[in-house]
Image (cartoon, rainbow, N blue to C red):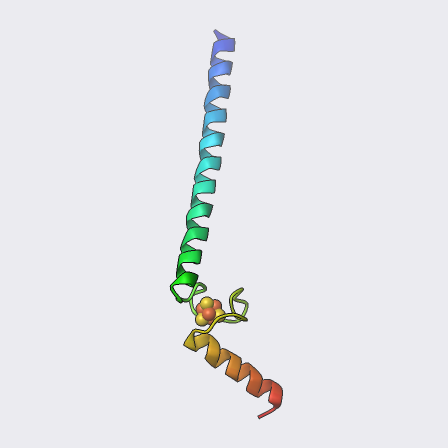
Length: 78
Ligand code: SF4
């Protein structure tokens, strides 16, 4: 009886672990898909915080252009 309970417990632990990993994978996939869609649609992917945004160099949104202008002015000393 004890071995049956142990085996059952192992089975449920393994199942819970696999379901958790699957949910993490699905959540990551949804996040990546959403980010790609936003980039494709020309929408901000970082909540409007351009400093530290991965897409800053290639971004053409007004907020990023303004930030680039401000950076260029700062570097020129104007
Ligand atoms: S660079 Fe700025 S505007 Fe462009 S996606 Fe990143 S946070 Fe948004």
